Length: 163
Ligand code: CUA
Image 1: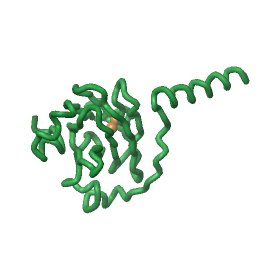
Image 2: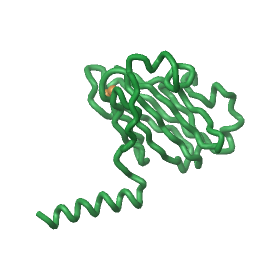
Image 3: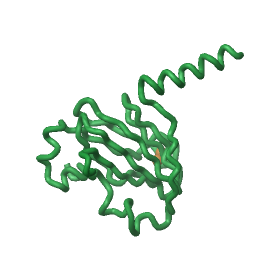
């Protein structure tokens, strides 16, 4: 019994250190009934924004049954911070083959930091059963080469919904 506990603790520590995998620990509250009216989750602020230090912040709102925006564009080899929240029930945000995996809980802001090593499209089905339409709830993250990103028009940088 003690041996099993020790092995499990070791796995947690090793994956944390080698894969930058860590439990979501960002405790930040937000009012789900008013978040669309103003502040960072107002519609005009959703999608990807560039910070002064060159890193990117992508903001998404999850609700039954979709993510807004449903396609996010980011640059490869650049620090990316995802900030998500939900307006109704618990949803899940997971990008395969990355350290991005978080629950999106109403009333809280989920924050995950990552860095994509190569360009490509990451499909992102909702990863937490959230109701009858759960299977149709998805978004995707389009990662473009770092050199390509600054050449995009501001609207193209914010999201890739129209493409
Ligand atoms: Cu949202 Cu499942």
